[in-house]
Image (tube, rainbow, N blue to C red; front, side, top):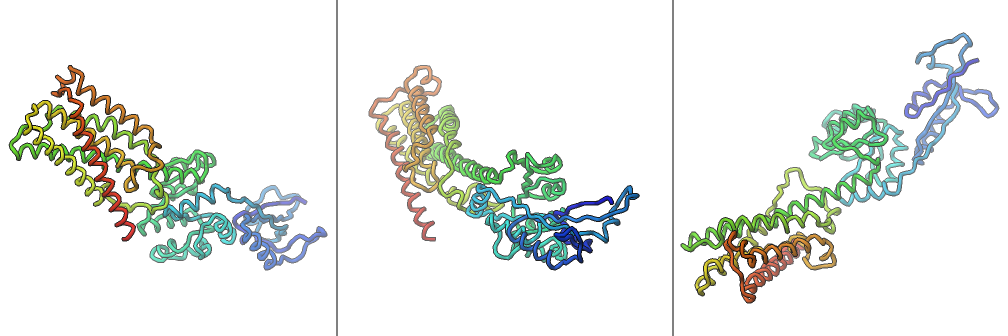
Length: 444
């Protein structure tokens, strides 16, 4: 007698429907006890094991082909096997980091709901509501699903259509949805998600083509590393803007003040160009190498329509622009009235505004934390570019052909006190403002 032996990983209930007998220890058969096997399957699933069922059907020697209709009756059930695939420690830690970062992790699987819930508990996924299966989801309309998708974190026995509806429901709730998948059936939901992420090792080419990102090592921890790096880059971009704009604001105050007061320009066009170029090429680039701020992974994600420059950033830009601009304008008028030549005054003001920006760089390395702390020397690039900036400024002050090109003149040693004092003023004023702002945020 020929035998057909097959297993069911997902369709356990269908296999139970087919079985009419079950094998015994004595190689005989008896009537299939569905309730007993359902209890066994539930116990295995509750331990987080993926359950495989096996059965066979005897057919006559003359049978040369079979189809699905041949398996509808007289199937003898053999038993169940549980496969344990424990979560990796780094995956558990990564899920916890997601929670701290305000990222809600949801699990969509084809496993039995009990298995899915048990695995979810091991990973730290789930909010106590258990798991909901695909059949229950398919019975919901779109409005009901919008509520359910926010209440549950574990979705079991899902079809490709169910996954697509879940992604759509999350997006309709205003969530930024990232979907991770590897199979052909995942392609529609990967395409629909805001950020589709395909497995690079186990993933199919269809899944990769439908995704915006490919996870080359198939490690969930890598996604958290990417989030951390993204927050670092975004924060450093804002710091760079926060650093550069006060330079332009101070220059605008100098030019406007000179015009209003009927005086000659405090800085010539080529000197303004030099300030913009030297701050952007040297010290502004140092902020790109800043590490991630402490607590950056413990704050919620920013909202979709959050402005790049918030009200605090706008205040800081205006605040520093006024300090540098008005100080340089006062310096210009005072030195002019004291008999300094126009070239000498322009050279002192040029160095003052550049040195003020150099010192302000160290204020901007931390948005609100004190500039001087245990990580003060962590960014070696900041000190390197500051040293280069000092050399450039010395060059345009004392090298004759650069004096001619930029309209500068050599400075006396005592005259360097003006740039030094302005740098100290800017650094101190910004640190005081940051301290006040920290206290306001802590009490609000």
